[in-house]
Image (cartoon, rainbow, N blue to C red; front, side, top):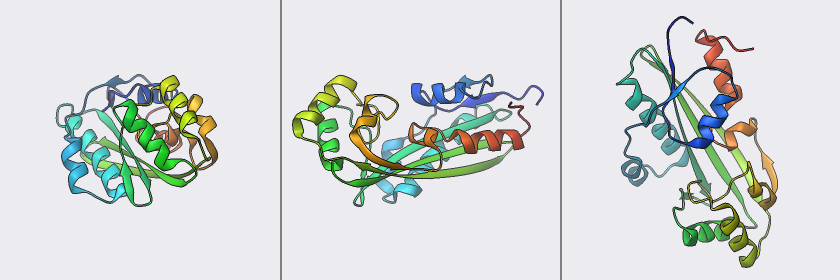
Length: 194
């Protein structure tokens, strides 16, 4: 691969931990992307997630054009409504109250910038949350504080107990970065993986 560096255009500890699993050296760099402005303009969850992933990768690629840059974003959609990161305990409880007992869709988009071109991948996951009491939702939110997670849950820890069924092609996409697709892309770009 030579001296090309790998950069994750994210400050997410979840995406960082996932990328570490591939065993490649990489750096993290905060993307310069106005997520709020795009969320206000784009109502389709797939388009929104894909656009945000590309914007994040491009913003870092402008600063590091020789690097391979990975951008990612996730959007939760339930019955036509996009749910973002709750940011507060009250909004987390509200989001989980909307999701409990229902199926919803998690859109995980990834964009890999390399040598002037963008490689995109989007993973769609259907999750069915079991019926939950208000007290159970509050207990979960207080225990996990999933305030920085779209949909207000963390499947990689206690949040797994909230669900009846999860249908996905790549379980790593659920926690923020589809490693099956990313590994294939990086191999095509010349990175050596085991």
